Amino acid sequence: MPSSLSFLVNGLVPLGMFVVLGCGSGPVSKSRYDAIPSSDRECHEELEKARTDIASSQLVYCHLAGNLLYFRLRSAKELEELLSTHGIGYKEEMTSDVVVEGKTQWCYCGLMEEQIAAKYGEHFIDSLIDVSDDWYVKNAISNGDTLYYAECDTRPRYPGDDEHPDDDSDSLQASIERHLQYPAGYQPRPNLDSIAFADVRFLVDTAGNASILYYHFLFDMDANHLFEDTLIAQIERCVQRTGWLPALVRGRKVQADMNYRIYFE
Image (tube, rainbow, N blue to C red; front, side):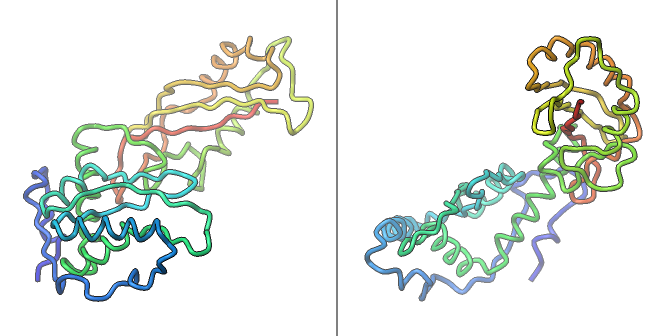
């Protein structure tokens, strides 16, 4: 049986042309949700809704989008369209990080997972996600889209930084500390717990060229906000605009934004 990836092509092809074959065995005969106690009413309500939808041939794939933090699927649009060609809906669901004894989460989505796997095969959804993610990258590159740095496999990296950064750059911070001259009247932090920084948002293209999109300053010493324009002018002179390592998604260079936090005295 051909793999879903064998249908990938070099170039832009409508999503409807992707076909993924399943090898499931049919409806679920036994489920891990069969043993849910009757006292777990919320779970049973979800299971009842799932069974009603399944009986009406309305299957739904749920993407677990986190609990405290929300993590959307970057290829959600492409996956939703691809799932629709198989008559499957798509939704993003979050769960609680609090475990309550006698309460089961993910009941609707879990039963749907079992049904989809039984009908199409255990690796069917994984295969569709892989296809849709590849399509997402092709679309982004073709359209010249700017991707959100946190959704990239590798974020843009400032020249001289050896490690993949989060929101800090050792090289940029070192350059600021070497060259920044504070204006007269600037009030240094009275202690290490005091806040004095600027978040700088960059756009980095696939050639490694960067441009600054905006600044956001935060000072505990409110009077320091008067010097934002002076600080910006100096930061502009410290920042390297070329030689960045572009963001990567699935091994391909993409245009992405990036946020760096610069700390002040």
